Image 1 (cartoon, rainbow, N blue to C red):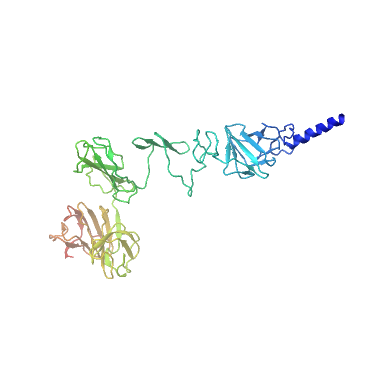
Image 2: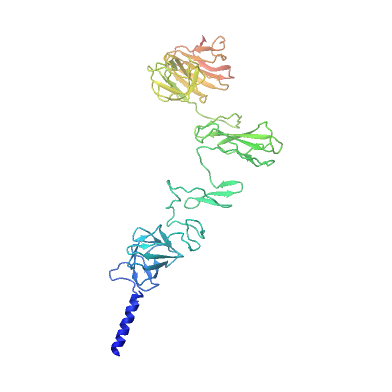
Length: 486
């Protein structure tokens, strides 16, 4: 009988082992070597040690605690038997655990533990993570097919470290709700707020240029504009010299302006659809604060005090000569010259032979670069005669010439320029055929005639254009004479 009892007990243990039920051992928290936390009993909390925890073949469910800090990475799970199923949960959901595939974790993507659980299967060498977005996932999971929406914010594991997309894997459209706000800076001090009438920025917007497309206006609404802007120039530090907007409604009158722009409203004379049925056009011209120049403004500007500035000096050797480079050249070459580099930039160069001219954009010791227009072939051929003269934005400048040559005075109403001879040479000032210079010589000068300086260092003359056809000499030194028609 005693032998039978022993046999029955042995048979019971054989059946129990064959069923894979195993035997529970007393749980323990640390091994004697101070390595990763281990546990054999279900529900034991394991603390990560250098990214590692250790489980036994009996462990089916554990809570995982961070080693230090607000979050931790779990990269390796030691222990386990083939086919073992292990469910993990964060010991503190406010301190997430990131399951990374850099150790013996396998899956389509990394995972995270916070307020949910994750179940892994051991395949003999790797703990396999579940497929993200699998059927049955709970609300709040991040699913690739979008079937379960997010119920909380998507946040990175550290501030200002993780990008949304990349240079080679961009997201497409971004859909935001009414009143949505886009924040910038770590302190969220820059904002873009969506509204029914457009986006609102809480700070200054800086851009190299501005151009909008036309949209429908609002009839009878004095506060609305048609977005119909025109960038009249691609140059300038602010991207454009002026912007033009069309406005439908009553006469808007005078508008307040900022310190660096000037705006004027004019009636465009077209049929409108609001207010008094006439559209108005607003032109804003930028004031270049760096150069203290008002760019391309056609308005009158009044001051109640003094306006002061500096007179620009342009120092030249010859102001005229002959191109001795190749035919059909885009750049003028005079190999006998020794120009000061960039001294002519901003001046106008004239091809006297073919009647073209252009704004000088560069020059070195022997060449001048400009895009010619208005002539017969608008380039340089061997023996073409060249001249330079004050450029369109060089009024109120003084030109110092040291070699005998000819300089061209512009025919722009209101233009003023001073010409000074620094050597014992004669300087010839040429004008347009229709222009007459008054007060420069003892006798009257015919339209189109040049005036010639004495060959004396220190001779000078200051010319102011009362109109496009009449220049007045404000002052001179030396005896200037009528040089006749050029």
